[in-house]
Length: 137
Image (cartoon, rainbow, N blue to C red; front, side, top):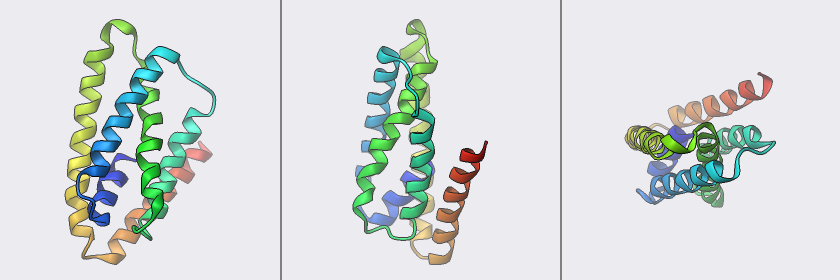
């Protein structure tokens, strides 16, 4: 999902708004997950985020771009549920740094994909297939 968000940000021309919003919502989700715990359906929302990113590769001028940070919140939520209170901030800073790295690398890849429509659609198809595989497992 993070790779999709970075690529979509580069393709949409909105530069760094989408990655920063995605990271912010992941942090909000991590805090919520730590405080409130898990809920049923969280995994389905995470899988849905893969599908949404994949579909948006085919049409980047889309209002669904706003769904990416909202769905990223559930990724952060899942990480927040995983951690205990005493190591929460250390773990959260690590996964936020790793997430920022993935977003930066995928943003750079998205700049290359701007010029290659076929590769962009292949990448989108890969995200959709990964969501379908996750649903089957």
